[in-house]
Image (tube, rainbow, N blue to C red; front, side, top):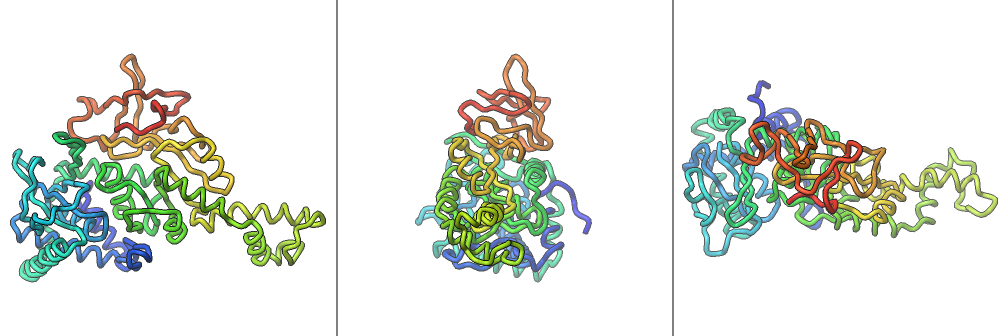
Length: 418
């Protein structure tokens, strides 16, 4: 399948083509459960994108996608990009008196020529559901009249064209090109080993720049499966069994409570039953005479607790600083959380700890494709995913309060830059 490089809709089309029946999104039971396949996701994006085109969307037009993180929001965001538009994220849903369907106007968000932007309500309230359904119907009609229109649209997207806008203040914004988003996602995939079939769970809201690449696009643009819920808990991790978890401190504290709450006797009995043929005993008697058996069971105990928590063999990453006691508590149960430094201005992880050097205080060496420079002006970083206007002419931008010690990035207070 020949595709133009470096655009979000091109990578989405490749994933749909490669594994049409595989799950792209999976929701927890409390949100209705079930999975959305790649072919289903591709059809939804196709029809909403064509609906936007039928509604008058032009390449480069900005669209504010409102609503909570869910299937509708993700479809709408991808549809805007496939139609050649620019997706502007905003955390708050549209107000009740503002119409949806891509026809509303939002004050305070500049459009293509410093004018207002369209609004697309992708929320789960009746107005948003009806608006998106109407767009899909108009898209189906256009699809029937011009079957090649959708492919012509996304193939015409310029990799260097604006793709996403993330407001950071009342009058400030970060603008990312398609090429920048794709670079960030590919770098993250290399760090975490994400590829076709990988299950990815992340807690950063997709209305943030880093969330857009970790929570929203990391699995989708690499053919994996994303966990679809706005509030992620340790139970979600256990139910999903992800290959990659990008979590905040709240999630890792919840995971620590879950693994610490395991009944050792129950786990040992489970393991003895599972491995009775390979162990010298066939009961749960672990008295003084069973010292050898206890050591054998212990070798299985820590991995089993991690497996029961859904984290056996998973790449676990924290984008927030974690205290040493929490890291030790997690590691004691087989959960090794690697600290990383992510920067909104680059929508990417800039540095991450290697598995052999996990600990509090530093964020590890630079991520693939990231360069770090230290001079009299402090620490500067160069990456391929930096927002427009952030870096200098040579691609470098400063990290205030950061330092480099032994090849590892150290950020003041251990916190990500704003």
